[in-house]
Image 1 (cartoon, rainbow, N blue to C red):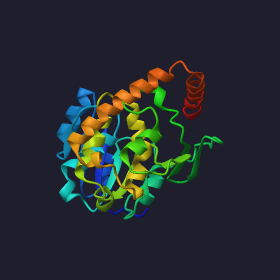
Image 2: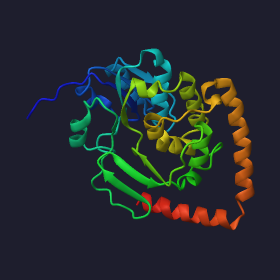
Image 3: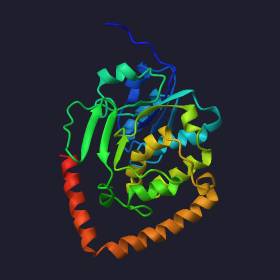
Image 4: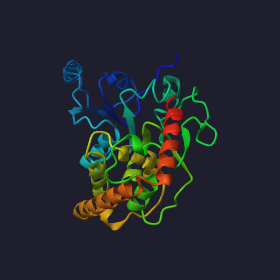
Length: 273
């Protein structure tokens, strides 16, 4: 068996209640953001790893990636892997991981050969490419103070984006990205998205941003001016919260809303069966 060489790609590992030591066999440098709630695991990780931060349990990994971008914006590694502590075995097979971990190009870290296409709903096009219908079916199942629809968030962040019928993304939010991709947008952009994601434990907006990561890293949209200004963003976000509350309350009793919620419930059961 060929011995695998450690990559100089910097691993940013978002961890929850597991030991991510396996990843250190593949990389020269790393930082772990640990959200574990198990005290014994936290103590073990504290003893084992020097490059580790114990952070708030947000319920999702994207907050840790954005925090790294914010803290290291001026000195980002050339290439970064955005990984979850349980990514291998859940979002990628070890075999696929070992094929791509040293990539020096933009890479989706996802493969699931057991996944069955759901015609008209979701498809796996090839290893790494998951295509899902864009109808925000997942929104009703979690708190969504600011956005009840992916398309509204997309237009809030970017100027005149194409609103797609389908969303191409990496389930789990794991990628290999370059510093240039991250620095397309200013530090405040990630500070603002972090604010959107962390107002409560695992809001629906985290699912929406998960589906937007490929747009953030791969598209060339201009962002709206307030996305570059923390103070202006906070004001705009509170305005959006009022609009969202009004829209949800106004549509709660409508036939269209009830039918959409019923359809989304069916999709939710289909996607997670």
